[in-house]
Length: 386
Image (cartoon, rainbow, N blue to C red; front, top):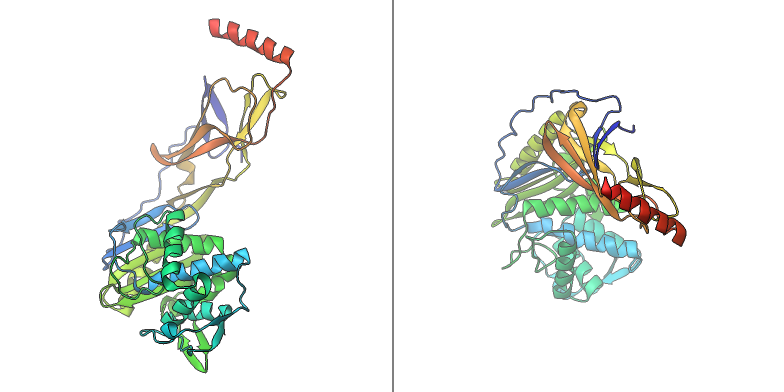
């Protein structure tokens, strides 16, 4: 719904609800977040990227097999680009075959399809499958680790550094709860065609059936991913994702003391998030939020809106207290480039700023002819006098 607007020079106040002018709605009471027994943890709304709960979210910690989320992400990216296919047969090296810890049980000297390796990585947490995938994509695990770090920088994972594809304990191999949430959000967003794999409870390869170690897949029907991890140094870790009533939440718990604890603490965060918060889409990309005058152009008016959806995480049933304030640059002149920023949308709730987004042109406007431009220069001159 298009909000009402009130102008004071170039400052416009929009109410999110069209008929809302000065409603002082009270947000639902939200209790304090539950106490979580973990070294670092975080609860994120996947749609908005807003963080609902966090503690030590930027502390660098060993990720153990959470590392394999990045290994799988890169494999999925290569599949999407068409550089590899699920039917490609990857050779199994001695290095991959000799890996200890959790394994898919591939055999040295054989070839395994990329599709099978991907499931071995995600469902079975196979160290051998991870090394085989890394070698197939990049030629060596060292080269693949460099690729992992390039993707980490691109995703904004600024406190992560990878030296292997498995999470096997190694010096200078670390991440944070915040970075793991960013990676989980990218997995759910970028490769939906492969995301169903994360919800599979078991996988059989070479006659050996292994269960997914994410206990929440059995306990909570809303949970559909993502990955567990454990080493003595890292403790028990879990990145989980769940969707209920159109809202997707991502939780990260790192450094708990048992398999059951990581599931229990993750469930606390999910319960809290779904019970007391909601994802609220205020505007869609392309919505016309304002129409303003343009000087020197072939068109006299410009439509302004957002380049992407404006999505918020708010206390449940509190959307009536939302207000959006729009500022527009003064005296817009052609040429106007579609997508270029010409103002800002600021969303507030009870005077607290929730989000700011660029207000962009929804169309191109070319310069007018010489006579129109001269006339507009004259009008602007006299306008400036008054």
